[in-house]
Length: 397
Image (cartoon, rainbow, N blue to C red):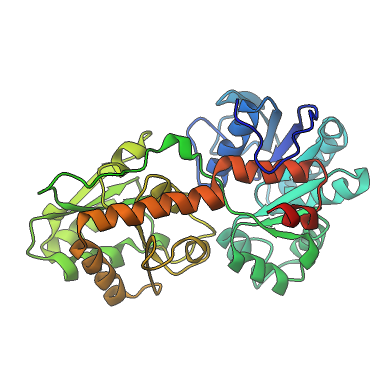
């Protein structure tokens, strides 16, 4: 069993942690917040700790109030599907759960800073329970409680979130935004998403001579990922060449439009659409670089997986990516939406000797191990669950 990195090792008893997620958690996976919860919870379980997950009973998820997913107990709070009234009843039932069963847990960890998180912060303050609230990024900032136009309920909920014992900002840019919204600086900790690097084997040798230069994107095929811009840049860089490949792993509404765009640009034979993969590490092992052209992210799990697999990343200069990608060291950064800059990054990457790409990938793996390995991130979280202060964590960082 791996040791708890960055956490007390004085024989403390196993922790009981309640994870609060205002989304769904199922065996089908989900988005970034769901993926992160799974990574952290499963690692805690491997260490012998106890994790329970509570979510709303959402209309698009399983209509089961109690289930085990990935071996983890999941409880879902039922509520009427009535605007405003339903949300209010859901929060009341969440409060009842926290006041009852929630007392038996050592700490509560909120994975999306929204209404259920606000309830947890209020009751955590009342019960003197450690509450860690993770702010994942774009949703909370642009569509959730920190959006420009907020109603009275959202204003109250945002005030309650500021009662969290610790607010986990997954990037320095998010920490800056939290400061602008009045979150106390002494309660905000920059702590990135975690990646289980044991899943990935970083390449130490170049790919076979003569193999095409291969870039890979992993994620949903949706507008905010700026994939049409990626295809435009790819066409500008490589139209007419036969020794390059661009691979898409994931599904989404843009797949057919992207195919049509590639055909119009004369690069249809460059692109592979692989759909969803449960073994993304196998696809990454066959690539030279990972590409993340997103318009907005908090901190992309995909970026961390690229780096864990030893892939240099070609990424837009956005929250999270700018914390991890260092041009000339482990990848390339380009301004959001800049087709020409992305084209130039792709051309530079394709022109490098294969060994240089490997060397950059080895550095990427070392950097993600140092900053975001699941052992290091969970170790710091566990110290917070055991009531360590941010100041105490920073002394041993």
